[in-house]
Image 1 (cartoon, rainbow, N blue to C red):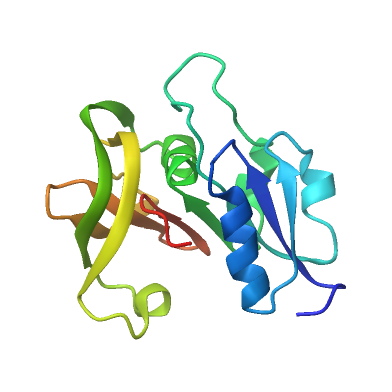
Image 2 (image 1 turned 90 degrees about the horizontal axis):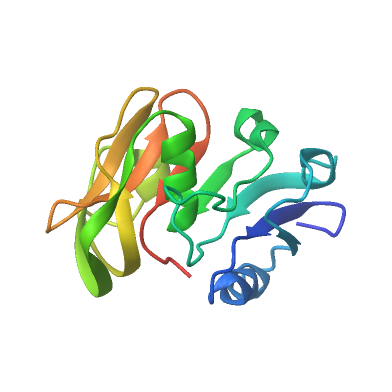
Length: 172
């Protein structure tokens, strides 16, 4: 990917936003970190090849929680939501997000569902790092659950028709 191509990372306040960018750059992928409220016209430039919604400490169910420009959910570009980003995607597409009874923090094992494009080469189970309080209560169409944790938490989602994905864990 050249500098004429980029991945836009929207920062929702995660401690790992810089690490997400670092991992992409280590893979020789040019990326830029932008504030979460950057207008879609500045995010979806001709150079943009995908968008990542970072995690963050806020709760999507809280009043005045940070949300991106809604036009970003309508793009044809690939979108990946990480942690808080998964919850934003879920909420936008009608899958309810609820406060958890307890935070899930630390190592967890998830079972990977059927989605060869997303999980290619990773097997059936994956050890991941979780850090969240809220979680998706129920996955509703047009989203599908593509992974779940051993304690029953929705760990990854995908849009049925578009290249929109979310992971509750931190892949970075």
